[in-house]
Amino acid sequence: MKPVYKYILFAALTTGLGTACNKRLDLEPKQSIDATTAIQTPADVEAAVVGAYSVMGGGALYGTNLLMNPEISASYFPNTEQYASWRGTFTGQQQIGRKTMNRDNGEAARIWTAGYLAINTANIVLDNLSVVTDVDQKAQYEGEALFVRGIMHFELVRIFGLPWGATANNSQPGVVIKTTSSKTEADAAQKLPRNTVAEVYAQAIADLTAAASKLPEDNGTRADKYTALAFLAKIYLQQGDFVKARDAANAVIESGKYSMNASVRAVFDNKNTNESVWEIQQNDQNNAGTSNDGMATFFASLPGIGRGDVRIAGAFLSTYPAGDLRAEEWYYVGTGARPGNLYCGKWRSFSQNLPVIRIAEMYLIRAETNLRLGTTLGDTPENDLAEVRNPVRTNLPVIAAPTLADILAERRLELAFEGFRIHEIKRLQQSFSVYNWNDAKLVYPIPQREVQATEGILVQNPGY
Image 1 (tube, helix red, strand yellow):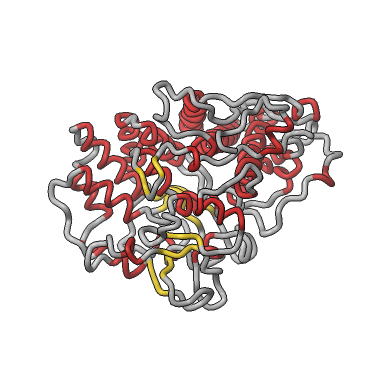
Image 2 (image 1 turned 90 degrees about the horizontal axis):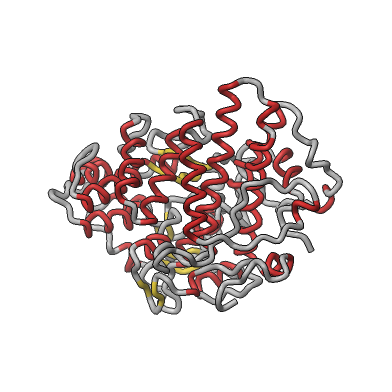
């Protein structure tokens, strides 16, 4: 049995721009593709780059799992009345919500497979840049490939490894760092051990730093310099490196490219607004899914839209201040599947774009880090918090002299159900229900197929 990333080049070159469709990729019939010679022209490189974005937009990654699963991982089962709960019938998500995952959990396997599919596609691009003769185009493709590789390693390590800070030197097992491509059966047969969490973070930072230096300042709807810097801000914040997180967030803000919308719904109802730093592109024909994948599929309960599987707790809604427009605009009582319950209105349409990073997050990172450091780089914490919470946008007064607790509370309210919750609990070393931030039950299992394929060199996580 060979590792799952054996045949990914064909998928990368034939997947269309945007996000993956409902059907999972059937790679087995394409085993005869000669991956060592498949990229011969700049157009082939472009196709591989597009393929990497498409993989990341599929349901296994940012199309669903990387945005939804961190929310249901932080559900309070069996006491589900404080945040949210999974009420659907799909076993994989049910196990995630109930903290009963086993080594064969299908959603864990999908994330692992798709994550390394994207990484390998990026590595293939990097291997074949010599066919691109235009200097600017070559730098762009290289930057995009490094961006993909960096963010995928980051997402994988915080799902499959104990969180940053769980050991004194972060030597706990992370994931396998892949910086070379698998293009042949011999490549795919390599048996590689897991790198430490510290090593994986270092690789992600190195890739994104290099990406930021190579990407253009504007790259349309694809990753650019500031997208890479925004992810660096996220990584540094997760590490507790407040100086570097502040500086990266400040660079994104000071670029002048982004601004908060006056309406809290605008960034979710419209595509590529000034508030969005990077979002997954979707439309009616090309989206993460309408029945078995997709954010609206699981979060919405509207006539003809959604399964109503992720139910929001009334107790969480009540944590929004009285009169907060976000409570009115982002939450509603369902009228479709499982009617009468509370649902998140950020995800209402199968074809809507999916914001992965908003400028609101950068303001909140700069506010938090400046406050922690006693600095005012770029602006004061009060003014940065006011960009997010202000009378026009939220119908709330500006908080004068905000405390750290004020900023952290605002992160929880502003970024709710966008893929942050379990990562915030781990970052802040908090607990919920009966689970501590470093509980092994909050770490996903390494797919058992991968453990067996490496004859145990890839070590399974405890409890699985």
